[in-house]
Image (cartoon, rainbow, N blue to C red; front, side, top):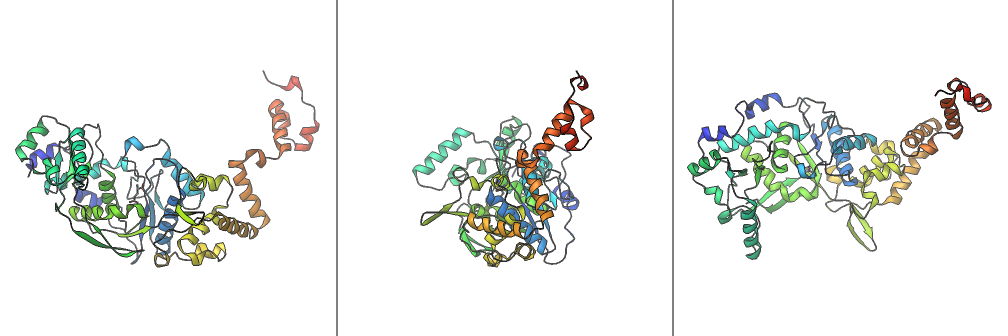
Length: 430
Ligand code: GLU
């Protein structure tokens, strides 16, 4: 194992210890059974309707149990980061009545910051701890070396990854590792996976019941290259630390993360954390002829959340629809009732619900018909101001405003009078 002084020298000397973070992010004072959920998008592009669906379910489960729903932005992947994406998530969630109780761009809440790029010290402290416990080690393999291993693994039909004979740094003599660190060689920090030949692991999923998968046998990267000015953790590592320290009790996320759950559980164990419960949502599907396929970001305009806003679907009807996708029994009750009813994980199917726009149309129609004229006008105006300004402003008012710009004395008289009065060139300012 690396000498303690060597490990300590890899980090800033004043870096807080995990115990300091445990005290700072204290356990939440919530009633028994209250769930803390989070929506944790990576800011790599537009919000997908599947993301909004996840957020709707996560929020419902937190609120109906007396808990809290957090928005955490997972922006540790610098190469894929899109400027302004975090602001965009907050705006879109807010537009659909799914604003978080904590987190997001405003970052309000005691368990923040909620942008991972601002939590670097939290992760570094935990990486150092794993090194001290010999559950992690520095790896000096460069890209070429890793590419060569991957080539051999493909050729031999072995699983891809850093393990066994393809993991030379795992067994590097501590003196050798210390020498290379002292010489300033670039490195990443890897998890020391507990076994080289992993078996199968069984865990509970609140939607799927008992799930059995191949366990992780790969020494995954925890901390990215030391050559970066500010080395950041990988997604896998950062989100485990955050779920623990944000005191998340239930991880609601898309099914595409199911196969990563074994490595997440392994990380929780290595760090000495009690893992949260998991619920993996099946992806939204689209009918294509007689078959179904996953909704595609590229092919389907309705995959983007922006589509629902610009098309003018009332946000409440969209929220109702998302709850109906989760629990079919909520689809055919009035919107107010559907929004007040609990979403039940045991009412969800492991196969993906079908996104069916005619159903959303009919929910929207019924919702609009239930509004008073005043409510309808207010909602329409809100929408038109944002998405169709030309239709939102009465032409006469626009004409009045233009005359007012020309002759300021016309700005504050009634519209009929302003339109009847002469425009005077000598009333215009140079
Ligand atoms: N940042 C991940 C994503 O983009 C979140 C996965 C998770 O919820 O654990 O989907």
